[in-house]
Image (cartoon, rainbow, N blue to C red):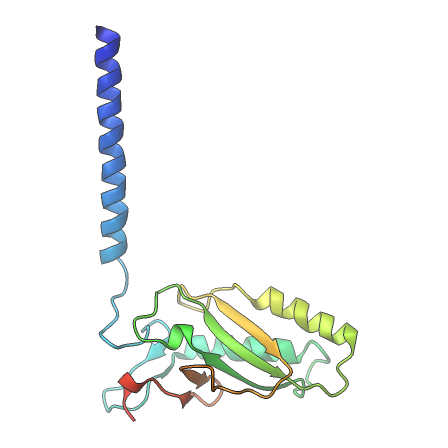
Length: 176
């Protein structure tokens, strides 16, 4: 009889603990993060202005991306800035109500002049090293995608150029 009682108490406590853990994690995740305003971008990546200017990348996020692009340029020869022709952030993090940990997808257009196999391998290895690192001061992972084709944003809903801090394809909810 006593063994049965101990077993039933243990089962009850185990059930209560599991319910508590579930409630705690659900409620913690709902209330302990930076809330996003309706139709807004993540404030840990973009800064908003009171005078209705377009949102821009935060300086820390912009510097992080520019340093990574410089690192990719330096794979060939340090100080040579001719390997990367253009780059842009597309979709995921630019979408309204995007998740707080969605990736920052950046398409990088390579200059194909004198692009030998050894250099291709070094660029791929450098990109793999840069990918999946978190963007400065945020929960977003950076995901660089190399291409030799001219950047075309017809298939993308949104596009932003980090160097110029300008929208290429701006979301409708941000205005004209």
